[in-house]
Image 1 (cartoon, rainbow, N blue to C red):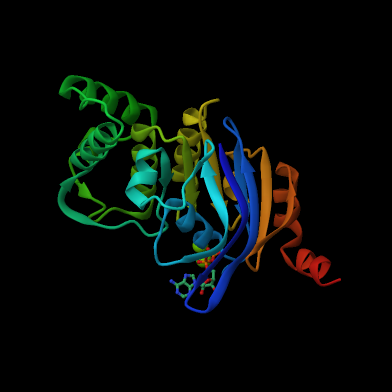
Image 2: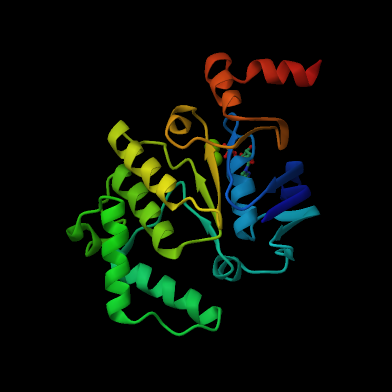
Length: 250
Ligand code: ADP
Ligand code: MG
Ligand code: MG
């Protein structure tokens, strides 16, 4: 589904990604871990089409289609979803209206008709129940005065509603208490199917107790230096990243 080949990217004259290779198939959950500043968020932003970064080499494709010339909205319409580490506030636009617009824009871009209002309400009800989201929450202004946990839950709700092919969750666990973490993780697990893929970016192993990845990759200084299964995350929790740095230097 997602194929990244020898991806190099810079901002100004600073190279941040230094040759990333990553293959993610439908039905898989991949975790990307690594110390602060390794380039995890940069990688997520570039997949989503953030134009502040310059891709200097390599390619990203989704279902065999090269994404490089596509704007962020076009990528979103093709099913790429990126949760934001720091979500924006949109006063006056409710959670429900935001999602309604997003869904209909996506449908329009794919040549489909708008979702009928009744159908929309039905889906909203189903998904909000699935994620244990209070009905009152849905009429609040987007992210305005949301607690950390509410912001994250809202992101997962957006993801549930949009049903992306590829969901990238960038540090969705940061700032969550254990109950919110469990709800977010439950939501992600319920949304997992053999038609979508999920990339979870996290600094800590904690989230991976709840969302068990098929593969774990360690990103260090702009490169994936190690890949393994879920046990690699436990090893990182126990031993930190220094041993991998030392392996690299040896
Ligand atoms: P991570 O998410 O792994 O903590 P980031 O992708 O946020 O790492 O950052 C990787 C490196 O790129 C850091 O050294 C960071 O300072 C730098 N960087 C990221 N975005 C920018 C930017 N917009 N301008 C300048 N430097 C940036
Ligand atoms: Mg960071
Ligand atoms: Mg980051």
